[in-house]
Image: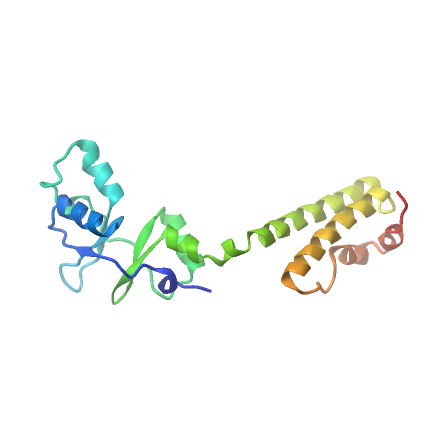
Length: 204
């Protein structure tokens, strides 16, 4: 499992809370950054964060002069920080719970910044979308097969055909994983209804 440290952006800048918004904008433009970490005033102080959204929504939208507004007036402080060893899954949950787009990665000192884009780029779940969809489809078809068998009868051709569909999907999943399931969904069903196995031989 990847962690925040594996995908974070190490190229991150800090700015003083007393700096003007104009200085913050210039720094963002110079390095194409979307956020800056606001430095602590002392070791016991908390870090802050100022983002391009803060500048747009709190300065530009109200026609304020960025040369006269200070970073500390629009920043978020204290900001939520991420431990470098935190798994991406939990970073994603943290972002979802607090509606974050980015957060500093800190362990005693500032190590980097992690964003939604970083999480997406490093997420293993995105590498196998087809497998995930197949798993969802499999569960749907198993529910359908059980429902068809309950409505049409275990000995019906419809019941047998429904399990054919289930086993085709299960075979595809096994092929992708290069392994064979210990029991197919139909075999598990036959443990509940032994007569279903004989009824599976049918002529359409």
